[in-house]
Length: 279
Image (cartoon, rainbow, N blue to C red):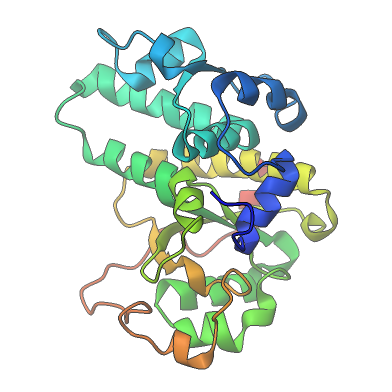
């Protein structure tokens, strides 16, 4: 990636947090070197150059679980995956465990529907944090989001993003695609409850809180066993995450699609105050 490319806000924030001034993908050794600054606890495995990982008789997820190492190629996709391991170590470890559990029970192929949903969230997941003292307005906005009421939740109420709704990218493929953003880029979101003072926390503390909350939420939802949990959101429509957010942009129904009449309601709403006790 050229250094003069204008980065969208989530990438700016991630690069600043990880101090990736060169804006080039990192090797496994380079990622191991920055891990202590981003992942102070023991939830994050180490990273191993992909060519050194023997995957001839073990599936990728099983290798990670057994070796406590993540096979890592020298490209952006795997760099972002490693950074998400550092920031969401508990959640990524949980996903790894759930994959291995499914593999032990049902084999590697064909992939189960649950594993497909776990992988989709791992690649394209968005976490939306709602402070406990804003659950009433938060649930109303999330319900609008689930019902594809894009004009209301993303345009008319854009000031609520960053005050009531706090979006954080979890899916590493989303970061890779944001290097060259395109109309059509879509995430699957999952909401969590966070403490009242979330907005004033240091960004590293926010990630620690999010990681604990997200892991607890996925556990409570049986690892996305139901297909009715995740809902889509046009990623470039999140306020201030794209530089062309005009009313005309939000009126593009090829991107901001209306809800299909047969679409099932999400089973993740409403959020409850009791959800906070798992954080």
